[in-house]
Length: 181
Image (tube, rainbow, N blue to C red; front, top):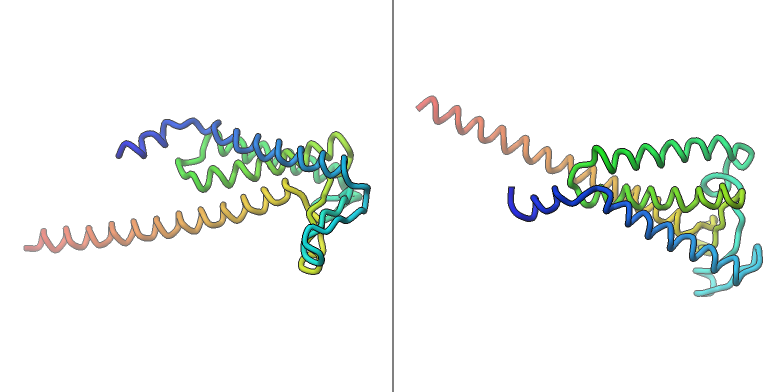
């Protein structure tokens, strides 16, 4: 084990919760700014026809779905947030990409959960007009980016495991050939 790996192993997992906290703070601050400066359903173009700030109160789950079943979604979200947090703190390996992805997912989940509990709805405001028909927020972005990073981390882990297995197989064959001579 080299010095860099040793330092990574010593870095406590809770450090990644600071990343989650940063996501929560940015998410809540941008939502506060949206409420302070936009009226509900008001849309302000940043890049006309492409990117607008549009204040929407989302009373459902992802993209407004399941609005009649808000409590079921809140229970599921809480269980998921707790599960991902426990995994990050107790079981996650020293993979920075995976840990960062989990931290983003936790922060985004908590950011939206704060809205659901405090307001009864989630504030959305990022609107890619003509490209995407849904309005979303920073927490949603963190969850989506975190999920993408998690998929990438899993693919990279599979590639590394495959390379290690091939290397082990090649070493065993080499050892067997050496024993035969």
